[in-house]
Structures are given as structure tokens and as C-alpha cells.
Length: 615
Ligand SMILES: Nc1ncnc2c1ncn2[C@@H]1O[C@H](COP(=O)(O)OP(=O)(O)OP(=O)(O)O)[C@@H](O)[C@H]1O
Image (cartoon, rainbow, N blue to C red; front, side, top):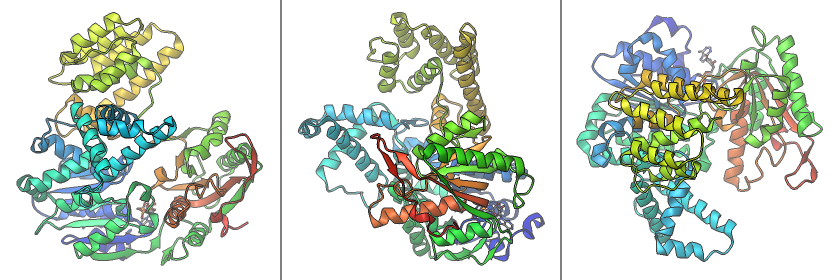
């Protein structure tokens, strides 16, 4: 074990970091150093355990993976010796390498957008008399839309339960699933659920292939285990057999907030039982001030801490007359903190140390406007896809998809619609097809799109996007300033993603590999500057010196839709996660009145979660 960190880890932490053989379940509270211990364990395995093996380190987000890689960067060969990323990212790698055993050729083409999947299902319904009749029976168009949404959820539910839904009793659900799968297959496309499902099938139906991975990944570590779902657990369990049982799961059932997504801490418990895992608890909180820990305990009276920082910190409630005034108060307080700092926050307070968390994006709208008005820098997403400002770059990306996957007639028709031309019925020779479409289009940008695609086509065997990006920039040069800058910005993001792809690509440098990495958010930049303006769900695993929990009114947080006991308990855990992101100062803010969507002004009751807050 490396001496460098020994003194910094507590005895319990050290026992986890130095654990080598056998299944291990670490149950630990917020700020107890779970992520850190996991990282140090990987370091220990890679430096002190002899033999040829790789470590599989699964994180919940790409951001967490990037941080872990950075902390282990000093090991030099970490990329060759460990896969550090999300489970979806791992499945993508497995399927890209050995997908032929489940009928894939190369990297799968992913339909990551809900609207694309919906379109696939809608088309599939029209081709299935049973389903189209069912839908035709519904006269109200809104209700019809709702039914399609329900069917999409049912598809996702079945796919994320490969064990319990192995046999589907409901004829309608089976029919919907078959129609959807056929539609996706016609497009040669897959959704996120498929990535897990296919990998699970690959390991189960092809024991020899499974063995290759089982032997290679001698150690598996999983962070945020409380938010696993059945499919994820099934993939991990399928990666283990006989002597390959070196799995470590780290999680906190108190922070389980993806129940709406069929995740549940029960899989973490099941791991403990199925694997007869050794169990370790980490009960210290090295992150939060006393005031923050005390407040978290009012949200969950069973949350015990056996060691905590001697820093008092502060929890305060701010009341706005209305939502605009709530935003003003938050911005005032931020500016005051930037100027004056706080004795409990070392080295001054700058925007990057602060976060404003909302139960939904909606709760953050006025705050966003206020920050903009005052010129306070902020970011809204950790690593989600950049939303293009320019149509030409959007066109280029859609065209790239079709080029990567000639059977993707869905995006071919989307491109045709954008260019207001007829949809060709094939895209086999895509360059010819797109040239034909361009010859019929009036849009001035189509020439640039065709030229950029031609530049990619020239170098398909050793893919290089750079010449295409240059074509797009040259097109921008002739435009007025606003359009030019929009294209420049979009191209800069693409260039950075391409660069990241080249640095991280372990397999082939192909168009599908780049696009699927992009779909999973694996090539996007993760660190941002300024105040974090995030939903509670995306703040998971993060920490900030100063946290504002905004919109703390009944109906907003807890969300008015959480009516059942299960949903209410999850709202409670949402509040617990949000509060425990704070290292030093926590502000709970709410508007005393709100303009409702239908125009009425309504008085707001403070959230039940403020009951234990100091007044
Ligand atoms: N032994 C320790 N001594 C001092 N600080 C520590 C120790 N262990 C962890 N920390 C610090 O405590 C903070 C929380 O650690 P980490 O982010 O690993 O917690 P976590 O358990 O993953 O939290 P959460 O579940 O809330 O995401 C970090 O700032 C980390 O550097």
C-alpha cells in the first residue's frame, strides 16, 4: 500500500481501500469518503496485486469517471489496466468488441433521444393492425399521446427487468414491445436499455465470451450502488461466476433517488445476500459543517454520524415575496459572499464553490434569469449534449448519423424535412443520396453540409473529422457575425469532443464509435465554470462549499406529484441528497407567493422539509 495516503484515510476507510479478495459491500453515508476509498482501492489493486488483469470501475456519471481517472492519472497506465466509466459505457465497449455474438456489426447505433424512440414506436403502431386499432379507439388526441407514452414506459420497464420480465403475460405489452423492436431493428438502432440487455444476453448465452471478460476483469467496483436497477445488477452478476467474485459495491440507501426509474437499494442488499459479501459501514462525515449535518438529521432522524468536522457552518432560510424576489435574494446573497467570504470557507468564495439546486428545472428559471442579468457565470448541465445554435452543424450531425448507419431512414427523413425536400427511400450510397437531396433544396447551408460530409467520406477508413469542421468554419466566414459565431461555437464543441474521443478511444476509430460515445455523453467536456445551477438528481455525488436549495415550498419540493408513501419517501431522500451536497453553508429558499401556470397568484406554504431548519 502506498504510504502517501495511508495517514489520510481512517482505519475503516483503509480496511476498504486495502481489501483484495472476495465480495465486499460498503454502506456509507454522505461525505464519508466512499468515492475516495473506491479510488484508493483501485490504486492499491493496480499497484500491489500481481498478475495480468483489468479493474472494472463503474461510476454513475461520466463526470465521476473523469474525476476518478484524474485522481489515478499518476499511475500512467491506468487506461490500459482499468475500465473507468459508466455501466452503459462498458456495455458499449463489450458490444463494439464482441457484439457479433448477439447479431451486431461493430459499434451499435444508438437512438438516445426520446423523440426518436417515440417516432419509431408511432410508425410501428401504424404497421400493426392490433395496436393501431387500440389507438384508434381513443378519440381524444391528448389521451392517445398519453397511451403512446405509457407504451414507451412499458417497453423500458420490460427491458430493464430481464429476469422478472423474461416472460411477458400481458398480450398488449408483448405486442408493443415486438413492434417497437422490429422498428428499431429496421433502423439498425438500439436504445440505452438495449445496451444492458444485449450485454447480459451476450454473457449468459455465450459462456465462452463471458469467460473472457470474467478472466480479464478480476476486480469489479461499483459506486452509487443504491441506484442500481435489475438489468444493471443482472449484467454485473453475469460478469461473475465460480471463482470470479471480487465485486465491491459502495452505496448509501439514504441517497437512493432514482426509484421512479425502477432503481432500488434492494439490489445492493441482494448483492450482500447473493454473494455473502463482507459488510463495512463508513459513518463519518468529512464533508459537511455541523449545521449541515444537524439539518440533514432533521430530514432523516436515523442518519448517524460517528465523526464529523469541528466547523460550525450555517443553515439559513431565505424567504422571497415571490419567485422573482426569491431569485433576487439568492443573487444578493451570492454577491455578498463573493465580496465578503465567510470565516468557515477557506480562501474566499468564488462562483465555482457555489451551487443552486432545484427539485425540477422549473424551480430554477427565475434564478437563471437573475444570474444572467447580473453577469454571474453559471452552468446548467454537467456533461449533457451541447445544444447546437446553428442549423448547419445540426444538419451535419444528422447526416453523420445516416452516413454511419445507412439503414437509419428515420434521420434521413428528418434531414429531408429540414431541407424541405422529398425523402429518398435509400441511403446506401449516402454521398450520392445527400448530393441529390441538396440539388433539390433551397436552403443556403446545404452546400456546406454536403462538402463537410464529402470531407468525412474521403477519410472513412482512418476517420478524421477535422477537414469537415474546417469546411463548416469556412462556410461560417461568409456569414454575418451572429450566425458566424454560432457556428464557430458549435464547431469548437465538436472539435473538443472529437479530441476527447481520440484520446479515450480504445477500440476502432469509426463513425459509429464516435457517435455512440457522444450519445452516452462519454466524449463531452465535464468540468464547467461558475455557479452550478442543477437539479437535485444531477447534483448527486457532488459537493460545494455553499449550497442554495431553491423553491422549498410545498408542492415544489416535495413535488406535488409525489402522492403515494413511496414517492413521498423518495422526495425526502431527494432533500437529504441536496442538503448533504453542502460543505459549509446551506441556504433554504422559497417564494411566499407564486404565479401559477393558469395566472392566479397563490400563497405558498414553506416545505415540510424546513420544519427542522433554524429560523
Ligand atoms: N479520511 C478523510 N479525511 C479527511 N477528508 C476526507 C477523508 N475522506 C474523505 N474526505 C473528504 O470528504 C469529502 C467527501 O468525500 P467523498 O466525495 O469521497 O464522499 P462520498 O462518500 O462519496 O459522498 P456522497 O455519498 O455524498 O457523494 C471529500 O471532500 C473528501 O476529500
